Image 1 (cartoon, rainbow, N blue to C red):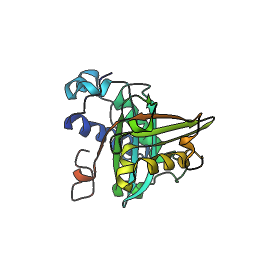
Image 2 (tube, rainbow, N blue to C red):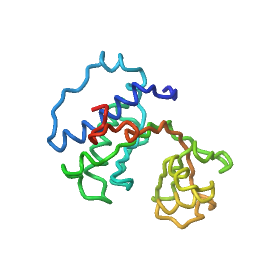
Image 3 (cartoon, helix red, strand yellow):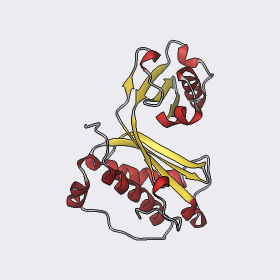
Image 4 (tube, rainbow, N blue to C red):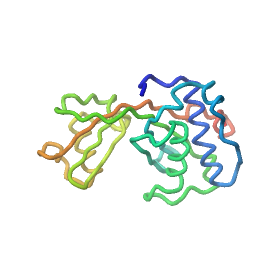
Length: 201
């Protein structure tokens, strides 16, 4: 699988897929899935089996975030699925309502494969996301979280442990597995048109 960066055309298409998936679930629009030839015309990375996370914000606040690490299908289909999951099935939030649709912004993180590390010195803040596993506890934080929060590497690790339901500092203990990944992160916020609708819809 290629880990080359997505083109702007591919990013715009994926953002449109995410928003249309949400609007379809809300009963706001109907549309036919693109054909293979249409996908190929947009860009080759869309058909790669890449994991992804879709994050929804409203007024700068998290409104939903769900993703998968292993691509079950092509990236564009995974984005469609995770967008609907983030909007309506994140257990931390009630399902998105129609009245919120025009007020949300969507961010997509297209992931590289997970890579197990032997030393935390391999972690590059701002470039790597962290996935921590200890027994049945698992937790993940995306690369952009550390940058947004101004965390250093150890703080990033501590918060990933907390996300997994573990004590901060648990990453230092034997038996804790630490994996990293990179992500191509992009959002529609900077592309919003004055009427509040994504300019790529």
